[in-house]
Image 1: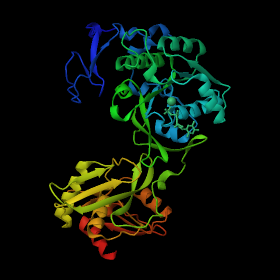
Image 2: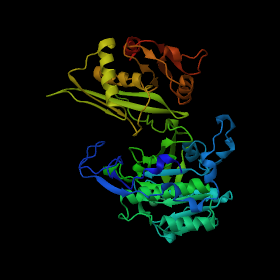
Image 3: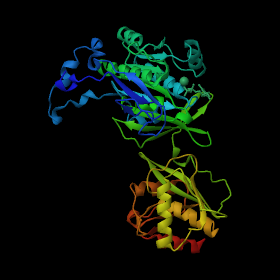
Image 4: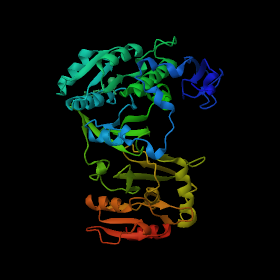
Length: 463
Ligand code: TYD
Ligand code: MG
């Protein structure tokens, strides 16, 4: 290899809490501030050669210089999992030779999702190998039988040594490999304790290098527990190509799949599933999943439409404003950024003339969705004002728009698609940014386009 890599580092220290690494040991992690979490990991001296003996002359092409325009695009073919919601989150299926980490709490359904995915793949003549280091093969077979999955073309292996796994892959030659889970894997090149961060990281990087050299695609399962949300698998983010998290909605009715990182697709995409006795079922039309309009209308509740990846999503925002009994009034945002709430309240005071400095304010996005866009700004302020004035916003009204610091209502992306979705779900009134106002009429929907927060607040006169 090149001269640059001649200076060899033999060990590094990795924080078990957040995964930051350091060349030297220290009592406290500089990144997350935890004490006594740095653990030594041994780095193999010839890192670049590690999986070379498995290669088939591929390494030679690594250092070739090419024009970007000449790079062969056919090198990134994808394998569909056959589960639309899964493929969507992956950016249109799994890229051949890529490594995808599936994280989630124990019991989230990671093994179930992968078993269903590989069963569909194997039906399309894709050779898959499922390596289980956790459940016994008979447990998995039983589950597959109960879910009525086709199993004839799925190869199984109970093994935890990555070297041994790679040997089996060499002879079986599957196109897709499932590692369930990466936490129980170990590499013979490391002498640290099984299950430790260094074992997990080294096993993951060994498998990843193997996958790249041999064009095998790997799904790795990683358990994430609540109290150590960042430990373990999250330290693998920079090793893998994509990291998707399988989570549960607040009411535990649905499973949400989202990409945290994706070298081959966007990260905004969400996949929706419901878990029943027949495994995970796709939710085909999730836009109204989080609306529960049978409830009695109450003040503080308002509906907005978010844009998640490539789809609209209707969500309810609830706000509660109460007198502060003592001390500093609390401001709590659940499901969106706390700082955004503070900023919105400042705009509400300055440009809406509604002062909340003495009030406690709680605002919550119903259903456990994390809002990362600004389109819900207007709805949040409408909800807060509704609670403060104790005026109910009718349930067939919908609000979206970004609120600027000078009290202007700014347009959001995909305005027309959001409006259409609202109309489709029976909303009769939409208050939206002027710049998002559609040129043509939308059947059934009365649109009020506003350019300032003050104009939007005037609507309370109608309720
Ligand atoms: P599992 O895929 O084993 O979770 P993970 O691999 O993420 O730990 O899913 C286990 C949970 O899913 C368990 O609580 C039972 C439930 N489940 C169902 O409700 N229906 C089913 O058909 C299956 C297979 C599991
Ligand atoms: Mg499992």
